[in-house]
Image (cartoon, rainbow, N blue to C red; front, top):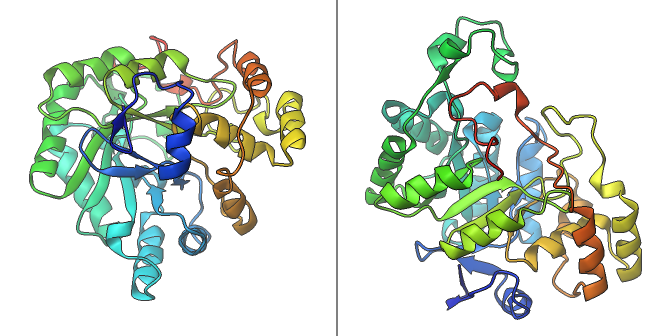
Length: 343
């Protein structure tokens, strides 16, 4: 990957921390810079997300991770517009990501999905546009089913899912870049083989892969793969997503892990700050979600301490079994299901 204009041959190299502390951003293979800490907006409810984004901008956040599927882009756009109007920030200082949802991952539907997000966000371009998932869901069939069916294992997978050609969809994202509507493009919830196809057959290389990544699921192999191909790895649910969705909804609470809380106590930090710092030191972009102003501020305050070798060893042990906390098990019948191969 490219970091502050320098190529770092090893994402785990000891000098990585020094560069990150200086720049607090990475340079994507598209040439555009991405802040290392972004605000995740998944599960931020209507009625609270606008205030959270306003608070975040006031506190110094400049990176916002959005998605059409989150159904809250309208409020996020209002918050951004308000802060620009107040003179707190300019559009050029912000890095805004949004995503094409599974029900629109089809070449002929890309433009519809993108235009909807752009309108709701009130922007004339986005900094990063992602395919939200490798899975494509048949929107027309979903309309015939009861509400909430998209989150359940389908009775008829052949009608529920489409077997999409990701390369064909990718070419439509490339057109958005050509037109100046998108600065960089990437994917989320793809495995190595699926990402490799885009690298091999796309005209524009994916700039970002966004996946679940945290101390229980450290993604070492995937990070190494991305680093070799100059693709930045972004971590969603870096705090373990206490309000998680999927088959592991009743799983362990990462923030309460005794190893983590002991390390946090040692440094006089919160468990969340330790989790974020550990990922940043590995060269991973982090997207913690919060609507609490105190925690929003705390999640930014990770630049004035370092984890020592003992801390890293203990945290490495936490992830030795590779525990995924968000598993999308209800979509396992999709012909494009990404998690058969290890992410």
